Length: 392
Ligand code: NDP
Ligand code: MG
Image (tube, rainbow, N blue to C red):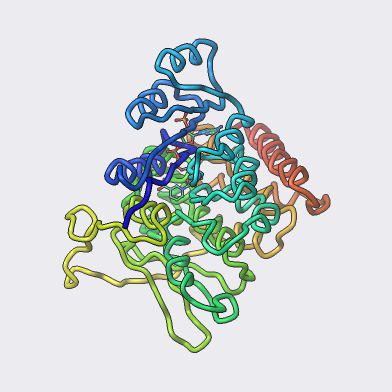
């Protein structure tokens, strides 16, 4: 029996994952009511969405002067900045907060949502990679924090009904589509333009994560994300290329049994499972969500080529070392990807910049969230310095 709708806040509502989350909310109005939403600076889109979903509260992290009046005219309360994200994340009228913004400025809001005992669906991987040690201890109950990133959502679905899951997991394996350059030579990759790297063969996503998918930095970051979310050491988390992206992740248990989750590569599916848990929404049977006939399934897997995709190994090494390295990696990657998108550096230089940032750091490990945030800033600063030194 369905009780009153769950009251949802969507942070990053105007983005790609935010759109997937809202699509699910729109299909099931008896189950989900969107009460608040946030975006970075896109006031017009946020206002249109807030009106469509009748959300009464909104936050723009970087508003312009005139925006508050436009929202007020529609009866929508608008707040701003990171403190506005915190206000939305802990508001008493919300049951469930979805973190689907890019970047790292919702970390404190994420902490507050967990502390306020909200259910949390997490797509934003940068937060958990850079600040996992200060976020994970705030999770109060099983399944309070639900991964939306498709691979982690698959692992969560495999382990959430397993008693003693962490003691029984031998290892987990995430899948990667391989991105647009899976079959490209190094020479061709060197000359790749942003348009080439943005043409992802499987997943339509925001530009930052799409470039991270082309370098396979995304898969390395996801390995660290998995270490954090499932409390696993680096040597029990791996990744494999699976071009069709029907399988999202495997869990190998210590009795040599393996579970995996199959579904169409569509972010609305992990979003639906995270939003609805412990219910399952009736989506199977709809053409857009159902798997193709079994005879069309291709369970092909390949190793990741470390030479053509050095970012993958760089991220794994940052995860192995821990401490300062994950937040430095997140900061440096942000800058290197932006420089490539602005055509200031060639594609393969992204990995050189990040590698140099990690090598040049010799300071301490973070002892607090403030230290971790400062290290993201240090990654940004060092990467910018290297970029300008090479003329980028
Ligand atoms: P998009 O670029 O499509 O959307 C980003 C969202 O974040 C927009 O709503 C944007 O608002 C908002 N935003 C941008 N800057 C800020 C800021 N400074 N403060 C607060 N909000 C901001 O990204 P994606 O949807 O692709 O990705 C979002 C997150 O989910 C990322 O962490 C990504 O790694 C992760 N993820 C994405 C997947 C995907 O399929 N896209 C899959 C798995 C994980 P505005 O419109 O105003 O700029
Ligand atoms: Mg993913």
